[in-house]
Length: 333
Length: 108
Image (cartoon, rainbow over all chains, first blue to last red; front, side, top):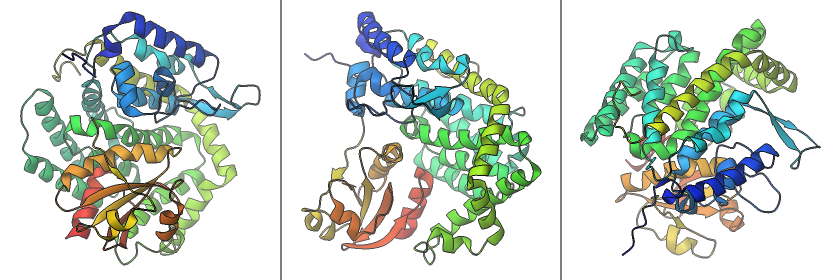
């Protein structure tokens, strides 16, 4: 009889965990692996992700078989580190690239693995993190709180209610999700504050059952985190750069709308943006190398704030991993 | 575990796509493309939602350059909806919510 259970951390073997994690620790310390937002493994000397190196594969099924961990848990943890570090060309490093940032961000590259108890089933860590994260986005002290419109907030609260029911084992009808989704898309479409767009887009993307969405959450989080970090760096930009950033966000939204229009969707982006000349100018301006240099400098200045919020999310994950066998309740998140 | 999506190549385009009774969503990708890997779970999640109304396939552009050329693929990931072997729309959305919305509209 086959007793193999795919989601059993390190197949319940401490020796297996130690062997895999210690091998990764050495590679991470020597700059041979990088925090990447996807599973990447190769043996020809190219870029390798932490999760890829842990399981020595970029095949998701093999990753699960070898580690007993959900792939998306590894990539979420890597994305949090990835967002908090700066990648620089470095001819002295093994791959010509090195990462820079604070120890409290770097250390999480392995800290989440160290926190795992062998044999635990960690499939619910990501859905629970999604619940905790969306709750934190709705908190009054969240950086973008003033830009979250009422209808978006209301959709997000409804999503949290349905996720809570689901994660506590209660059934949620498909039509309930359909209704929430329609409301969330409507709220997103009618939102008018450019700094509210990332929250509205996150909320509409979240309007599905949590467990089924967990495998798709990492790119959603990464996209949102990019805007979130830019917002935190905003005070360190010039007024002109801030204005261009806003116009650029408006332009991106108008471009997405035009690409949804069957009569316009085949047109090149450049042509579509001709209808919004101010936004087009701003979008081109923020892509200029000098503007990128100014943005990088602003991000560096904002590092204490960005490190703080990223580390807080890392600590949430650690807490969930450590309590992975408890059921979700508002108190535990 | 994940839904398996049929891989289509230059040789079986006719049988898998052109002669399909259902409209076909083609995901053009490559193994080295990080954003393609990130999008794959979303594409897989669409499969059960459209089980009776849409066929979903993927095409590795490195292995099948003719198909990529035929559908004017300039960057990946690239999603094209095909009916009767003819492209009727490129899908630019990347979230499940928006892709489902777009597919609902296109599939009528």
